[in-house]
Length: 215
Image (cartoon, rainbow, N blue to C red; front, side, top):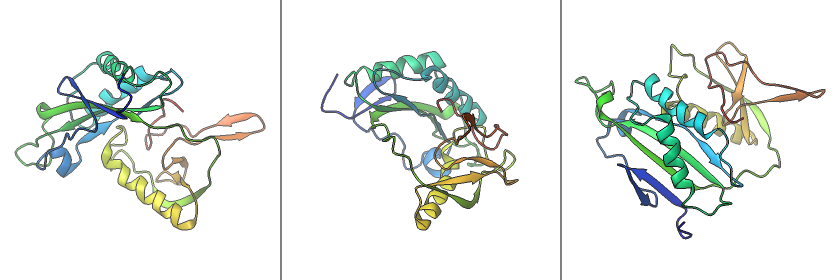
């Protein structure tokens, strides 16, 4: 455990202390957003559903036309090695990532054979259980025929960012997002739940948003 490092990066099968640079200027990922990732948490000595997050990043890679380079089990093992570099009670964000370095002859489509992998962990305190305010947003979740909503893909998040920007301009913390048909889907940064009369409900996954793993 290295107490003075709040970030560790696993790249090219070795650990690097700190926030290592991974994309080049000409990387397909930098240019055309061929990036998928997943996000797991470590806190109070536990890593809830880490195996499922590691499996989902491989599913996301396939959905975006990338080539998974590690099995879910291998990714989980790497993640646990990384967690062990921090204090036992550290609160961490764990993010495995795949990206494409090159495109095909037409440039736009990612070349799956150029897929690369890294995993990064950093100190990230759990949010305080104080609640937050939400509002509606005019922006919607896209459908699968428009965007790769069956992947946790970086290219989806600028849409979420403008939802949050709109909410902030209204004086709220987060946005309640609908799908293309006007059904409640999720929040801009999380799944959403409604508790009423002792019953908890959450939107049925309909293909416009990811069915959350740890929610």
